[in-house]
Image (tube, rainbow, N blue to C red; front, side):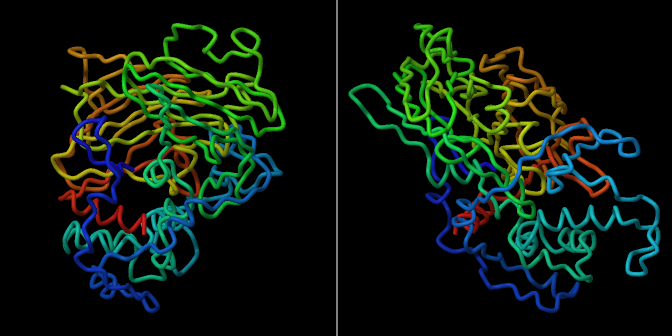
Length: 452
């Protein structure tokens, strides 16, 4: 989610700084006896108490291993038998019309499961949509969601507000450097952690930086002198590579036994260099990397230009780190519906930074909107920028796109390898939503509630 509204990428602000003092209508929503009429009347924005606490919450179980599913469930990602709670859909759903008299004629169990996924995604933010989109649109959404039927998800926070999130972590606790003369000093730990793929599945063992995966975004400006100190809290050695940086001193490149000795458990290693060209880069393990990056040792490294012009001027931004090893198919460590939406107001331009830390190609497709592709691997395309609605992002690649919000709505945005996004139990994995609202104040109110 874009929680920063900026004139340029170098002028990032906290969402709290421009949030209104109070939402226009903050009446609590009582859902004990929900009816269609009650749903349509409940137009007040519902608070999300405890989001900050849930951002920090994470517990552990066994990590799933992923493969394509068996015959009869073509391409569906499935967990090993010891990891039934996973980010992938189950293979037992059926498209055969159900005999359940409580379902509409012709509906299958798949339809009910698919609707429940979207209900979890919207959660108790649903009443706010009335004030944002108006009664006519809201009535259609209420009908689609089955507001006249039992709807327990409406009493809960959205799935994406119940798990830790890169966007919220960067907004609440951004990684701030110390200053040592003219050097920006970043301190990071390499940790064993647990990761909640979504709000229903048991958290799984993972690795991370400063207690999270993806790790906190390291953000600097072109020409900054950087000193990044990594302390290894793992029970194994590691090494860190700044992916895409062009080093003057190759001993800073982070490749154990080629440019350095590995960082042993309990030891620290310092990488010091000058940030070169601006763009979207990454940092990650480069030691036993198939395992360590797969388990979560990855993060965004963003170098802002000294001065922004042309395509480098945007209003909001969204960092989209994909992985397909830990927990299945994920965006920023989570599978749908626990993926933070991309938010924009009409007239705003959003920079989306795609970063692929996995081992597969993912063609990301935007519904209803073209993406203006402005940079590849941090290199600006300039006059060669082009528009597309599907972009294939390969392992290690970074693609920057600008999207200008022109039309209101909730627009699907997903990988178009279909087994990565949808199965018998509905949508999962690499699915996102581009949520376009009328005014920036609508985003401010939503963000304020998420950070309450």
